[in-house]
View 1 (cartoon, rainbow, N blue to C red):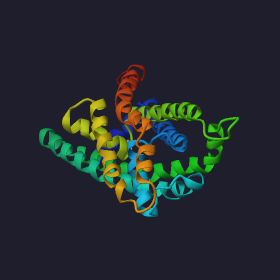
View 2 (view 1 turned 60 degrees about the horizontal axis):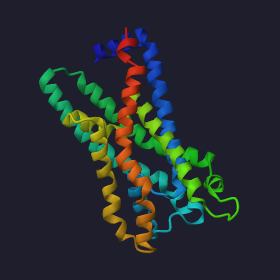
View 3 (view 1 turned 135 degrees about the vertical axis):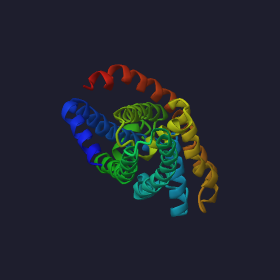
View 4 (view 1 turned 90 degrees about the vertical axis):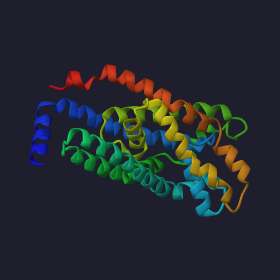
Length: 276
């Protein structure tokens, strides 16, 4: 343990620029991802794979599909808590993947220090599980649903404009994607959402884009399987409103886009060239 600590301190002393860069990527990526989530939700043109499952859980809790009524009052009341619960589940699954991979690596290398890295990885996943929903809540307080909905209203009819909503969603999605890529590029404290994909790559050796797509499909399954159990409201309307164009974008484009952008970032920010 002491040897591991001295090694990390020596790395910090000689490569503090890399450490500062990774810290910047981590923090900016986390906040941009949370901001993207906050901005896209009021557009109501579909939900991400994670959010569709969360919306279903909120519907089951509140007993109604009308979670967007009264300027998203029900949704915003429960969203952060249910995002935390969902991330707890992802953390558990990511921990299983990481345990299997670490055992295989230990059998091959006999390097006991990998268990220290494993412990910190799980610890940071737990921290992110409780921290990220609070960052989303912070943006909820800073940017009200009313202010976003006012931007989406048609100047003449006063109703939500589908065109404005689509362009606003695109802006939010770009912010969300950039946040994910910066966060993953940092390689630090990936959190359960990013960690489960990275651990799946480590375990299966498949490409990141394919791993993200598979994980995204699995994340939406709880919502698809259980939305029919919501007791009150128009269930079909709930499904087709939230499982819509935006959902397809999140499912089929997020993995490939992230994979491409991270490769570009790897060329621009090559840690090997920056490390002494």
